[in-house]
Image (cartoon, rainbow, N blue to C red):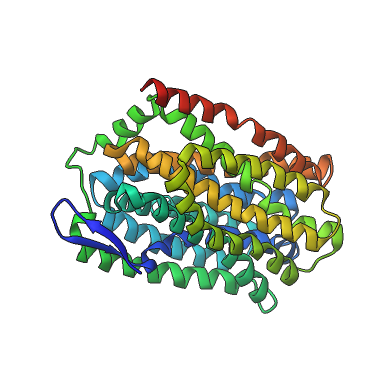
Length: 397
């Protein structure tokens, strides 16, 4: 059922379900590599440490370019930012699929990170503009569910196609992304009021993000975003390797186990949105952090692959709950600069995702396979500090 509201211009902006599917492309295109890691070590003749750089190579430019991508879209054109973002992401995925060695794969991942910076922030800003505040939590729940659905699609697609040829997974991502580029070009053409342009000069691309970064209210959100990724998904890239190392689970079966993470996220997302609108944003962020800590402790002591898959599935639902809550909170904090705020907020989220492999891979190889799960659980407890700070700022405001 389409969701929408009357815009300021008075004409209704309809947001059908297909609009939300762009939220799945980032996690799908980024996480097919996670399932393929054990296979690519052999196919590209490299080791886990070097191949893990391909994870960071995606996340670092993704995080950096998101600092300014939302401001660029706001100042010039959300329509063309979305089009070139999805089209470029598709072409970068194609390069990954054609990679003859790990160096070209890393290059393709860098380009994926740059182009994906112009997708999610733009979609989030548009939704916050055209969905009424009373239903924004539900909208973020749907967005979060489909975003997590990308985590479901990635291992299913990669695990099943890897039996034939691992390159086919990237071909599927490329075709889906190019198709969405065409869809968004048409959608924005139909609802031109959604392509809101600030009318500011090009200098606003730089000073608006910098001004937001100087705002005290932005920093607890930024820390929650970066730390939240580590606490909820920081170990995800290691799951297929862990299953293979500990229980000798093959790629196709580990892909199915990892897909449970996304499946529960899809189911929980819409319900999470209703809970957010009913109980409030900060309350549900607290619930998400507490459950994430518990799930990572459970993953670290799981006695068999089935139990590991069950707790991984629960964590997928927690992921959807946490990000729907934090997305809503962040978008409402800066209503006049939603595009820039969304891009900065998402940029910090993927700073966390870029840092996680650099920290957790040495822990995995040096301390032991279960150590990263316990380390992330301990880290998650610290997220209550920035959340408390944000709430106190709100009380004073």
